[in-house]
Amino acid sequence: MLKIGIIGAGTMGGMHADCFSEIDGAEVIAVADAREEAAKNVASKYSARTFTNGDDIIALDDVDIVDICLPTPFHKENVLKVAAAGKHVFCEKPIARNLQDGKEMIDACNKAGVKFMVGHVLRYFHEFSAAKNLIDSGAVGKPGVVRTTRAAGHPQGWSNWYANMEMAGGVVLDMIIHDFDFLRWCFGEVERVYAKGLAYSGIPNVDYALVTIRFKSGVIAHVEGSWAHPRGFFVTLEVAGDGGLFEFDSRTSSPLKVSKKSSDSGEGGVEVPQNPVNESPYTMELRHFIQSVAEDKEPEVTGEDALRALEIALAALQSIKTGEPMQFPLI
Ligand SMILES: NC(=O)c1ccc[n+]([C@@H]2O[C@H](COP(=O)([O-])OP(=O)(O)OC[C@H]3O[C@@H](n4cnc5c(N)ncnc54)[C@H](O)[C@@H]3O)[C@@H](O)[C@H]2O)c1
Image 1 (cartoon, rainbow, N blue to C red):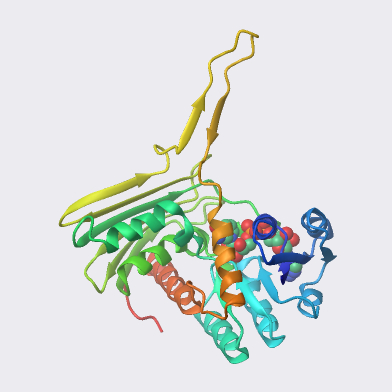
Image 2 (cartoon, protein in one colour):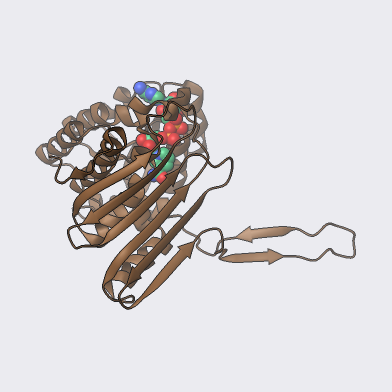
C-alpha cells in the first residue's frame, strides 16, 4: 500500500483525495492546508491526519508520495522539499510559474531518484486520447490545421489567486496549457508562437487568448482560451488533414441523456444527464502515477513534457505582451 500526503486541500486537493480512494494500493493518510478547516474537510472523509503546514507531511516517515495541489507559485519549493526527503511527487499543472523553477524541480527529482509527474490530465480524457489515436492511425491523413477552444468562467480559488497574473499567469498559463501539452503530445516540438489576448489589459476577472502555434512538422494550431464566459465550461477540438477532418464539441456531445416523462403520480419530469464513463480522467491519471511508483517506471507525462508545455505558455504570454512572434526554443 502506497501512503499519500496531500498538500493543498482546495478544489484539486479534495478531488485528488476522492480519486485516490478509488485506487487499489493507494491510501491518503495526511492532508495539509494553511486553512485548517479545508484540511479537515478533506482528511475527515478518509480518516487521514490533518496539518496546517506541508512540511509536517513531508517529514512523515510513513508517507511514500506527496501530492502538491497548491497554487502554482508554491509548487517549486514544495517539490524541492519532497525530493530532498526522498519521496515521490505528483504536482498539479502548470509545473511552475517560470522555466528556471521548472528545471530545478526536474533536476531535484532526478538527483533524488524519485518519480515526478505533473497533472497534464487532458491525456486521460477519453475524447482526447481517442483523438490522439485517430491522428496516429492516419484517420484524417497528414494533419494540417488544428483548432481548439477551452472556455469557462473566471476560476475562483484561495485568496482570488487566479486573478493575480503574477501567480496564476491567466488563462494562457493556467488553462490552455492543457491544450499545449496535448498538441505537443500529438504533433511534436514547436517552431513558433504568436498570440493575442487580454492578459495585460487590466480588465478584472476576465481573460481571453488566441494563440497560433506552428509546429516543426508544419502543423498549425489555433488555440483559443477564455475565462470570459459567465457560466458553463466547454471544449472543442477540430483536426483537419489531407484525408479528412474530425471534430469534437462538448456542447453537443452528451454521452447519455435520460429524459423521463411526467408520471401519473403528478411528479414533474426530471432530466438526468449521465456519463457512462465511470472512471474520471483524474483517477486514471493518478492511478498511472501510483503504478509508475509501484513498478518503478517513468510516468507517461514527464517533468520535461510539463516544462515544454510551460515554454509554449510563456511564449504566448510574451507574444501577447510584445505583439511579436516567439521563435523556439526559448531555453
Ligand atoms: N488539472 C486540472 O484540471 C486543474 C484544475 C484546476 C486547478 N489546477 C491546478 O491545481 C493547483 C491548485 O489549484 P486549486 O484550484 O485547487 O486551488 P485552490 O485555491 O482551490 O486551493 C489551493 C489551496 O491551497 C491552500 N494554500 C495556499 N497556500 C498554502 C500554503 N503555503 N501552504 C498550505 N496550503 C496553502 C489554500 O488554503 C487552498 O485551500 C494549481 O496549480 C492549479 O493550476 C489543475
